[in-house]
Length: 306
Image (cartoon, rainbow, N blue to C red):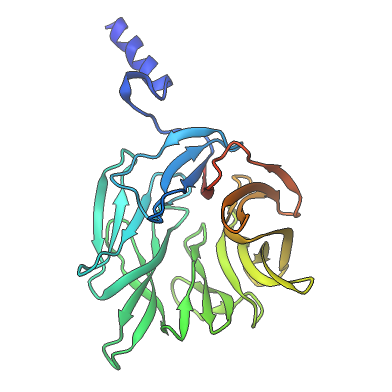
């Protein structure tokens, strides 16, 4: 009996012993490893300094994998020709835990899992039955498939709903609406209440995520700097105050994820015309704390898990 307990302990301590893997419970990075010409990426875990911690168990390579703050709720979506789009909730062991069909949609544009893991936020492309026109529909559903609700519907492609996020208290969502050549960010209560703009009209801003205390939203913006339009990362208060840029630029920005203490962010940008990704930890004051050179050349940080 003692020998069996000792062998079990050895398996739990080692990530590779006995042919298995164990979830890392300390703060870690969720990483999408690029390089596949199909556009699909391999999800992996990394330490906060960028050291690789191994692959995330998945039943197939997803277009992207989305996480709750503790990493326990994971989900992705699939659009397949001739079939209804589906949201799939993935267990921590890598199996499909639940499939949520979206029967009235032609496709899903993007999605996010709330920090608490209680909600999945997504945009569906639907045909409005009243006038037979295309619409983008912003929706919520719980990971068990219950609680479906629509928050907003806009005419598509005249307006495009961009990437959004749910706040840590599950009381509001943030999203962007692209209208022609500009994109503006908004916040809206999950229950009842009007949407409020939090970025200036005429900008091109996209939502990153809420800070751990819910007071700030990270953003990615395409703006003119010194006579040249370039991508930058920034911050804004949930009431629209304190809008500021972080002072780093790149060919494209892929994410701005808050560290566990909310004092810095992991920002992924591309360089060399998209041939290389650069991941930096940047303080909310704009100071670059470090560049994560241990990550692969096409890795991007998609979430910071606590």
